Image (tube, rainbow, N blue to C red; front, side, top):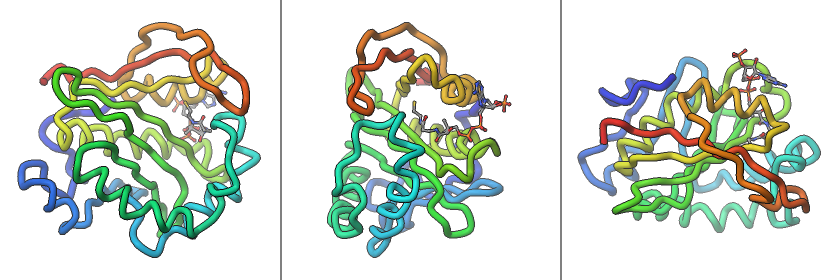
Length: 204
Ligand SMILES: CC(C)(COP(=O)(O)OP(=O)(O)OC[C@H]1O[C@@H](n2cnc3c(N)ncnc32)[C@H](O)[C@@H]1OP(=O)(O)O)[C@@H](O)C(=O)NCCC(=O)NCCS
């Protein structure tokens, strides 16, 4: 279960110093085993390789991959946008590193301001890092950072009923079930039902 206040000790940025501080300080969260931060210039190949090498493992949980998802140049072109999206409070697309290897992603997208103060979370981990509690560890740092940095009241995350493992991750972080949405997302070419969950910041 995440603790929201005071700011997580792994948070090296500043949630009061303004947007440009994030860039200057090279926003980075640290946990005992992980570093969580946006991609940096020159790292397009790392994420292209993450999706390429995990393609078969991740496809059942993702919208159908496009060839572009596996090309370093596509990602390299996205990197300035990833930084701008954080600065302009549109999205925080974060990567999870263990010993310099990119082992996962945690994307906080669709950030809405007043009066919703909410966003959507999606995540994945490389196949050979499964089963070690790493996503819970990453989200225990990232969720409080996102709540504080973007002044959010709610983070929504949704999973297919058969993806019990993902449901358990969310439960451990403190997300609560809110319902079932029929044919909610086009995953791997099929409209899949999803269990809707949310983390509420009761201190907002
Ligand atoms: C979901 C995902 C990120 C979880 O990664 P992880 O950190 O390896 O998760 P863990 O193996 O530590 O499991 C988390 C919890 O689920 C439990 N769990 C594992 N497999 C399970 C299963 N088949 N059914 C129910 N619970 C399960 C674990 O026991 C653990 O709970 P515990 O700590 O109380 O024992 C990872 O499996 C993944 O990348 N999946 C593919 C992409 C995906 O599904 N993304 C989310 C889309 S909503």
